[in-house]
Length: 284
Image 1 (cartoon, rainbow, N blue to C red):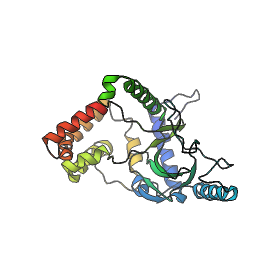
Image 2 (image 1 turned 180 degrees about the vertical axis):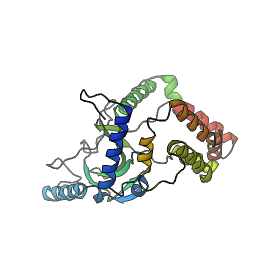
Image 3 (image 1 turned 135 degrees about the vertical axis):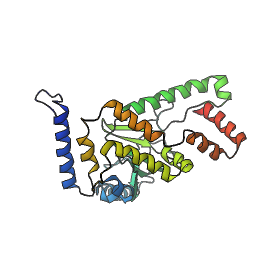
Image 4 (image 1 turned 60 degrees about the vertical axis):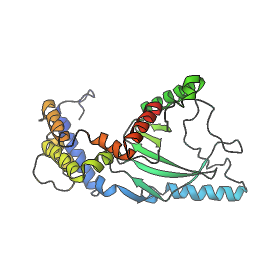
């Protein structure tokens, strides 16, 4: 996709390289579709490192006779960004919690990048869930969380904000690489698509998705792992106006007040809806 100078040579060359890359991936990983990877998976199917680390960490604690962990050659500090106000979270002994093991199962989400939710067992006898996201740069997300943390500190020092309990919900964002990061999992949450689907029904959501898919890749039946190839083939022939029109037509097949109705149903009545709205405005 790149010319000698490093720039994209043309849309045709880009499409050609995408098709070649897609064919190579399908050849090496014939079952790499998101539908087959989503759901609960055994952690060892990704790499044996996790189980090896847990065994080594357990052996190190038993050999040293330490309680709840302790620094050793296999130490792995808990990923955290809670260093803006009050420093990092410490256990009762005044030490930073260490990761001593991992859950044997991992949940793979069905979204585009297939993020994974893993459970970390810590030396303070707690467990923490993180979502590992690949092919995404989460450094901007981290800066937003740090900004929210600073704002919470300012609000806590203001009498008016403190008396009303005004604060922003934050969670850990730990960049590991420009294309890899970990996000603290917030329990009790649902994907926005699931919230809307509960109101309009699965058939309506599938119809909207099918309409958009047909506008992008055509109505011909698709073979396994053919979606990316068809998409790349139409990459250079579809204009921006056509893509915008197709997206608007697809979204128009879902009722516009679906999210409002979902919030009303979750509240259970008008009074609780107003209360929830006030809480949302106060805590964002």
